[in-house]
Image (cartoon, rainbow, N blue to C red; front, side, top):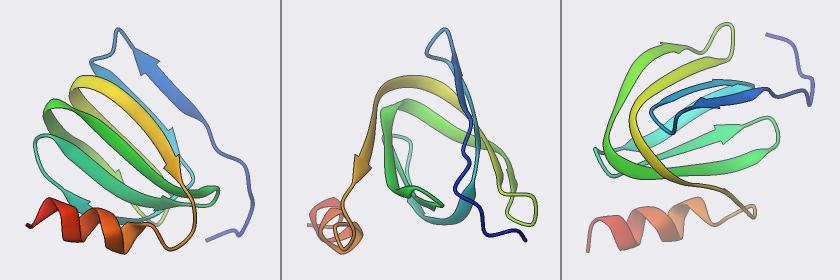
Length: 87
């Protein structure tokens, strides 16, 4: 896999998200998906979220559901998210 900093994010009607540059999916539920990308950690929040397609070899992710928020986190924040999620 290439180590470049290019990322493409396409959100259609807040219901279909295509993302490239994904290096790891850390955690996912129907309400939130936490992933690591080549541009930092990204939290996708919403309702009825489903990972439709995941190809880490090609750094691709497709999510369906209703997306309410896309938020890039600073390094080291992934652990805090997981702790809050499982309280």
